Length: 253
Image 1 (cartoon, rainbow, N blue to C red):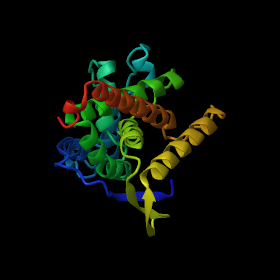
Image 2 (spheres, one colour):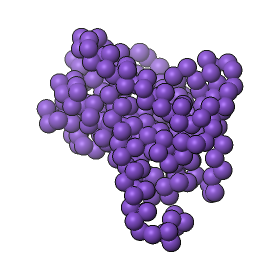
Image 3 (cartoon, rainbow, N blue to C red):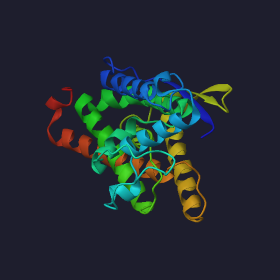
């Protein structure tokens, strides 16, 4: 999508504590990881730093072959085996807080900062947190199923944030979002158009990459697509439950 969202005009009724906590956790985890240049305690020499990154990802990132019961992936020959025992399903959660670089982190957090507070306000904090986590898990396992033999680590909050965008499309699509189009021109766009364009683009890229299985893009488009769908279905289910519970409970968050 040729645009960077800056703000949404929906007036949230309280501080989006869950969204801010998720953003803070993602930032702190990245700054403390060997992927951050600020983490000087991992050393400045190239090989120790590369081994630290490899061990870190092998331990905390989601690896498709591990998630599907293919056994634990070992470290490369140039890096000694750290000897840890990995819990595969837990890595599907921890991988949501890992990012491959500062640009990856910032792009994800911008979307979460703009759309997260709206969805949190509409769904309530606990429902929102549950939707975020479930969307991320669905995205991770769906990607693993599409790449069942892959040993490349999957990192990033994109799947969970795609779920937030999917929920936004359902619960607050009438909002208008100030967006930098082509990273230069600020424009107020309908929320549904911005989020819908995101999904269409991700789906197109996912299908296009699927047609060329030998080509690797480095981006898990499948995770974005399935995370988005999980967010739409999750928000639909939550709204249906709240509607069936009667109007008295609609204002309780």
